[in-house]
Length: 199
Image (cartoon, rainbow, N blue to C red; front, side, top):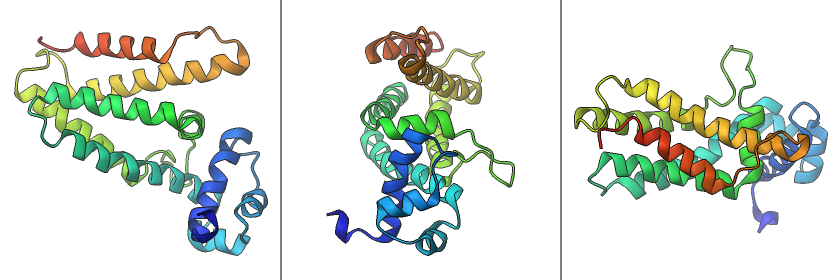
């Protein structure tokens, strides 16, 4: 139950819907602490500042996704099947958690003081490492077309997912023309991936 959760968990869980609904800039740390039932000093202790809290939300998400992916693909012999399973799991995760999806798409590109994007938390970099490992396996087995660079394909695949999800998100409040379904998104993604494969 929420009452037993640590102040760190309560702050993270309170910030997520507030950031998603109001936007990162428009959400005050006071509002987060009020919803979490804790103090600003606890926020500073656990996260240093509001940006640290946003990063913690992203990191926590990858801490759920990455082990689930590793478990799902560890006994799959086909590298291409591993990739399809991995992408399907990420899409399902984003479809289920709309607040997280909103934050990834609209707040993830925020630049930190050190010049890096907020989204580049260790968990995300671990996800990229898993994905790159699968794409390298595919290249080594001759499953990718010869002229396809695995890292370029990874960026293309991730950009495709991001673009499809972001335009759907924008379509709701602004009448942006993106009235396709989640099944349509998956079909486009699958067609893009298939065009890079030898079979």
